[in-house]
Length: 284
Length: 318
Image 1 (spheres, each protein chain N blue to C red):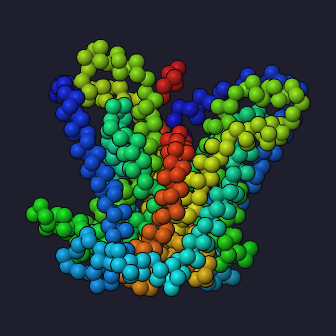
Image 2 (cartoon, rainbow over the protein chains, first blue to last red):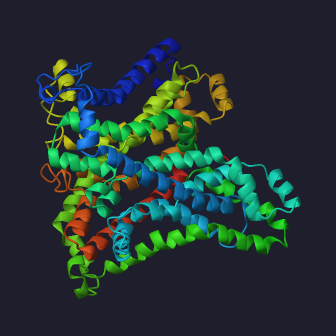
Image 3 (cartoon, rainbow over the protein chains, first blue to last red):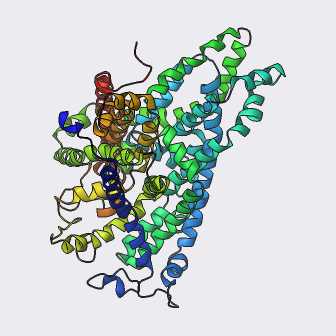
């Protein structure tokens, strides 16, 4: 390791850091930039050779044409609304199950706790593949195909990530609060409801947001379960548009912007919650 | 999740055992509290797993469901002689060979650069690098397929500007793999954030001690930071491996379900998906799913066994 023991002056290290960070930053931003620029181009301009970064419709009356076409003619307003509903319901659903189970794992002693917790952790390693076929058949049997139920109902009863995250958070709540409430005669459920839930609003918000993003982005289950075009979520809306109309980049990317924008706004507004939630618990 | 807190925290609550008389009531409450999760576990995880295990020994086809028959190990025998399975395994191995090292190293590099208190605009960089992770992967695939387009894409134009003739990124059997890895790296933010958080948790005394010994910046990183973040590297390695084994949705959106170009994107998950949902061969697809699960299980057990040689858990020494 002797060659690693060269002392490099801080200024040189700094320059190196900023150069590498700038390259990463450029490759991170460029796709967003190109996407947005392309949506402000006319049909002819998207295939011009060599390609330009200057959108020909910028500040012209037709500037928003791609967005208007995609939102109305190609139903993306509807798809976005569908996704909002599905992702919102699924993200809300997990809160109850995850907070109850998280509370039990963090603050209660009961037989089989270790076993159940082990099971909880092991579910992260189970590939979707061993579950999806019987799940599909079950949904078909329940006559839930082509409804939102398969996309929402399972979220109400699972939540490995959420349970784990809220457990971590609940363990940080001081024991004195629990003991004081016990002395006042509060039941376990009251302690959960009146102390832990109000105190854990930041963690619950994080869980809701992460769940929302996850469900908004989901593709496999909507592809399997949704067939009517008016029930399409935004992700299948995009793939169907691409399959039907091919590489109409200005329209396709306007659809992509619509699929990304709500999440980006949520991320920028609630950045602190999301970043901390990911950093402390990892799983997405 | 596999890191030290899992083990530490489990032992923390034993002091409450002294609350003897209410212990039984608490036990019942505890089970009541986790019952929604237990119901979900049996309904959406355990039940389906058992069902697909049973299907794997049958010739269950959704189109002829009344003729379902128990065929013993026939599916498993067919599995090992199925050339399409071997092609899929080959594809997944090639992809893993490129994607796994890069996916493990890239978050460490980014986190190491961001783990500097005197870095200007550090928060801005962190926020920025995580941003693509919230983008739906479907949208990411379309954006990148435009950028990587051979004629109109900026990727090859950038390369041409520095005198390199760009390849056919998405149409050639060799270049499709690096392209898929690049699309994946755009959304690598989760692992970067976790690694960064772990790095920030390394006690400063360790660095102070290393500085007193005259260790250079690189030596500090190699001898202090790296050992201290091995739990998160391990975690990343496990999850990335499981992710790669199941990977198929990005090429599915990008190139369709047929493994184009050539058989280059004939990933295992792609074959399984087609077998189950295009050909309705639920029996054989279940066999494939269980073989995948067994592989993941064995691989994870092996990885866990190697832990004691290279993963350092603070406060875990016996």
